[in-house]
Image 1 (cartoon, one colour):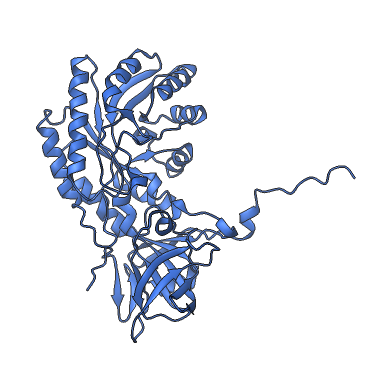
Image 2 (cartoon, one colour):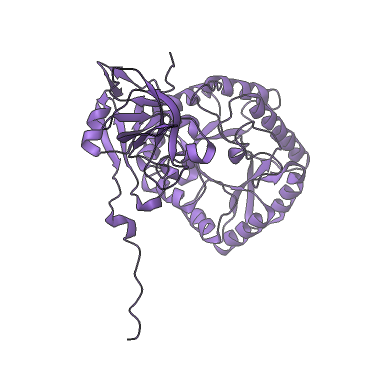
Length: 427
């Protein structure tokens, strides 16, 4: 029997619960499709990382790109997380929940001058800079404000994360970071720029990594550079090892959070005296991925000579990972039916053949049935769109026996509220 990757929800008395709340009640109250998150699962994931780092100078940053709902950010801020952002919009979200900008690292390859200015004025803790041209621009912006920007250079260690090519970021051919063999020159350059204060070094090799070895290889490459920089007289305050720890969607077996931290600290302790540097991490999917599901309802069962389709009210605009990455998500009936299961493709109403959530799943289904699409807490709602003029789903946070709406469903009127028709022009 398949074991769910999400132990915070399970069947009781013939129906599926999220923590202590019936999913059918959530569907009745808030409609479908809706994303449902477990506060308890998010807390547990963060605390496992934090406990594994106890007694060390460590900052665990949450990568907002995984799930930027304000309730998720607020919950993690209360747990003590810092934040990894990649846009001014994500910075605004951190500030909106009262987050400390000094515990924010600003990553991303394409920061605009306006974004740099806003982040400097807010007082972000560090910019993870990814190119020499970005260094020059940041120095100019900082000087215009009479400041020096705290900077960590993101180094590309040329380590294969052994993950999907779209989410691999640490190879030479990727757009991210400064090449390992050019890093020393970039640090020398940064040290001469009047608007730059060098404070750290950063790397991030990809996402959904299910082995420890790539993390250790990247840590070794970064440690080598830290030693070389010390020899140059460039002293840093922190080492940021990024994130990328994978989760189980189907048959993956990623290392535990504790095992990864233990292996990394053992490697770092063999290279540096403990606590010489603050160690930073930027985890996203591993904090929230298995803390969320997508709740959807079957509209029709359609049979052809070749396939049997369960057409649901969720679509690729809600969860694009299957279409984009050929990703696997578990699909579980909220109220399982008795009867012989049949193979179904779970598809949405969008006018694209690529609009599917799951293929060839053995299920007993009928119109009106509710389904839970598992592992939808990361890279789901944040990647959703209004394609086919569909409103984005509601978001609900469950905490024990309480379910709270944390984002309203978009109304149809809201879809074109910012648009304007053409002026009538001359008669």
